[in-house]
Image 1 (cartoon, rainbow, N blue to C red):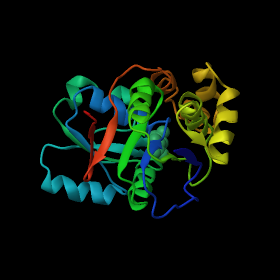
Image 2: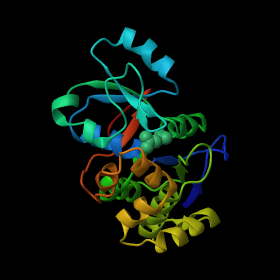
Image 3: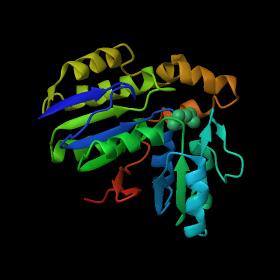
Image 4: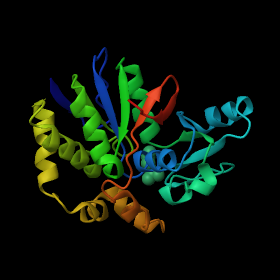
Length: 236
Ligand code: MLT
């Protein structure tokens, strides 16, 4: 079994068999994980705000969440900060969710035909590793990237998964490259998030406090998994 990494949306794989992990450390993966950890019933990732608005008509009571340019979308209940997805706000709620890069990466993983699609980030690292170690299949790490291109934080997190799973899986060249990136930051997650372009952008727009929320390793034991159209907490 081998781990391969897709570093940016420019890589559009087809007809894959195995498991995917979609990674958008800043911030979609971290927000999705936080919402499910706080009792959200499900999260429906969609590609556009228009699609999200249409779906609420069929799902009264659902919350609309997500961002464009990092900010809450006009008419949505919630933005894309893990801080907004508190238990009081999301418990037992369905959330319809769209973000610039993260929900698009989930869409690409779906189109690739993979059997199992998880969402990963520093917040659920150990729980995710347990899932990946227990039932090894071909493993594809989909980095969401930033505005269609490479992002350092997603590549580094992919490298951390490769480091921890290296005894069970072989590493493709892309996985070895991700591992080399992670080794530059090993143990310095907040420094990584503060140094990368998207972290600096979030600081600029006044959302710098989200970095420490996304850097909290193993804060939750929830692993989001796509079932049909929705992400829910993986049970088995
Ligand atoms: C995205 O999906 O593009 C991100 O999560 C952007 C953000 O930080 O809101």
